Figure (cartoon, rainbow, N blue to C red):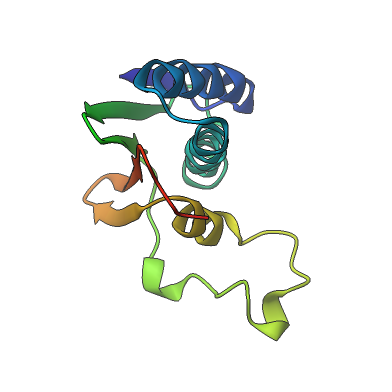
Length: 135
């Protein structure tokens, strides 16, 4: 498990750990890139939106390795959000917005995504199968 302070400067360390684990597990180049994009996006969202880059708040990233998949859980301690109210970035009125695509991208690149609001934050669990066809 990684426990990082809420600073965007930590994201390269997160990406390096994702790459190390995914390489060790045998994920191909595309799957490793997908994992890196998704995990750093989820961690970056926690840092920016949940914790407002307060380094005294921490983001936890847990890696659960299985024979056929990797599950990564990113946990923050912010106020949370209603996942049902996240605007669809593919709608015409949202196409030109500068942000709001992260969760959509994660859902497109991963094989499974669960977003849960907790009493003291949010948790996003992402699963990538070793022989994934996602993306």
